[in-house]
Length: 332
Ligand SMILES: CSC[C@@H](O)[C@@H](O)C(=O)COP(=O)(O)O
Image: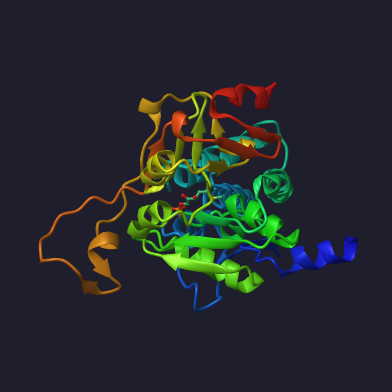
């Protein structure tokens, strides 16, 4: 049994590697066709990597940012400046601020930033595994599970959040099929498909606008997504399109789960404090270099949306599954 488990974690992708005082990231811009690495030598490289989505996904950007600050320490850069630069890379996922603030606290207490970054990295691996073990109990043999964006190994340090639940169910012998939303405009669904293919987990890709029709046909048993930030009132911020899925799930009476570590909870902010990232309009208007719409077209490119608590069946965390109105139980 033990040997089997070891092999399973060894086949998982490791998007974040710390080696010889360098941060090595799987370059997610090149996936799914090329598995290439992007090497960060200083905090500015890391800030670029987060902004340009070389590394992405809430827990992964937190871990990368922590190592970014560690690089600033190693290179004897101005730590306050590095902290500010890294903090201003992406505004919505709370894990970025959680990890940077932890490292800053360690620094101010005269401790090593690198040691704190390594701890955050290790903890993320451990809690994501736990989320999978806890959440897989909600999955029935034969389930068809729809997921949005990529809440997989690539979005964390190893197991993923929503995909940790899915891969643990698969490892435990449950015959599942994953419906992968393509997730326009950045197509994080391709990353999810890449991970599932890598591990032999059956999946089928759909365009985002197919989800409702599949639910109407009775072909979706459960929906599991990740989160970028969860407020005390149970509001979940996640990839744009999550809210529409949750509304559809409610209408069709399909359980809608959110999987996230405690580091994704923001107990201080109110909804009006949360900034929804708006990215370059080119991501929507162009496909690579091809302009898809009439010259001069304007568009929206919100990267995230918010899903109210009443649409969420349960939140799967490393400390158990809670209803969105029971969040404070997790912090007692
Ligand atoms: C475990 S990842 C959870 C979320 O970070 C994920 O669903 C998501 O929205 C990622 O957005 P991205 O813009 O790709 O960083």
